[in-house]
Image (cartoon, rainbow, N blue to C red; front, side, top):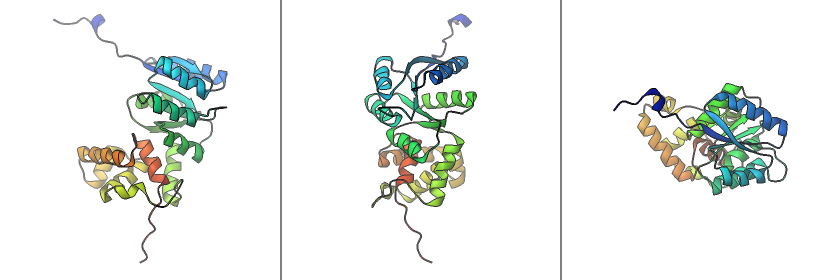
Length: 231
């Protein structure tokens, strides 16, 4: 039996929690997000503690998390939410694109990091991507990640490396992920199938004990790198 247009299923809107300690910023984000059509603001919080409590009540799909918060900061709140509510996705927002903030947020489990001056459409795309279990970062953040790789100054370097658990090809795949390549670009670069690249990524996530590309990149950047062999 054919269904009429009025009976067609309407896709559920993405439910977002806005966390920022400035009321005017929260109001601006709420009004902006409501223009997207497929995204709705489910609630708001003015602190990290309030964000954790509100997530426990509302169970939003995505939290827009300001990283610089008084008391429990955004990094700590992100870690607490990810531990208690692993299905909730976190998109970190900050006025400052600072290395410590970026890597702190990624280590805590954030699925993306954007500067607050992001264009509205880019913000909407980021919310949709994060809600769809993808990772997203602004171009400036990606540039910071690549700069870390190029200069060879990983964060929190220490003896031994989680990368030692990866195969040679998995390390190459992870390096290309850190450089910002998509799965298709990695497949083309290494003459592999998309299925093989996805398999490598699954193995990388399991061996590094991470859940997404952003966390894998953070692990890559903070791992000690082997020195080039003398010629």
